[in-house]
Length: 266
Image (cartoon, rainbow, N blue to C red; front, side, top):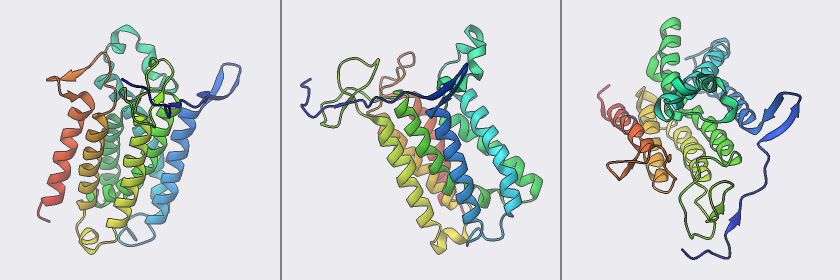
């Protein structure tokens, strides 16, 4: 591989913002807090406008915030352990709760949100699919900040490359790599946010609960599958059938679910 003269050095960013004794405030945690709070504010805004006007009260949104935080943290962490590092269960069980060290699974957090949404809508007698529609308009905000946190932590980096914007990541060898975290922040965060929040204004999506959720699932699946093509697979997992990463395999059910919601009859 020929190194480009325009290869970028990874910016020097300390994952720890400040530390007081044993208490450390990390960018990783701050990113999640900011993403959740901005998502909460955006959800409150959407609930006051069609097609979500009248779906939820501001009090109900505030109540759901607690469930959202728990589902994201618990689902994301346990999803990471089950999908990517099951050896922690019997080798280092205490590390399972150490979320500040990194290691969160989108698919786990996603399943956690599904469970929390089902329980919440059942309790308040709300439309589950209309509720998930408003959630997918909000979710890209958290995805964006989560991927920025991955970048700051210099984790989940891409494969080696000779593109001029390749970066040399700490502890990833001397060769430049794709900044795949930034690709995902753009596609899963910015692109999906714009797509879902524009399409929900369309009359078809306004009148058909669940369709915008289908768009999100399908679009996320496509974006994640594409980025996984340049993202370094987990060393201890490698490839399935020598072609698919574990992230791509976990995304297949999302794509199938998205297609089902898009083409199902009301």
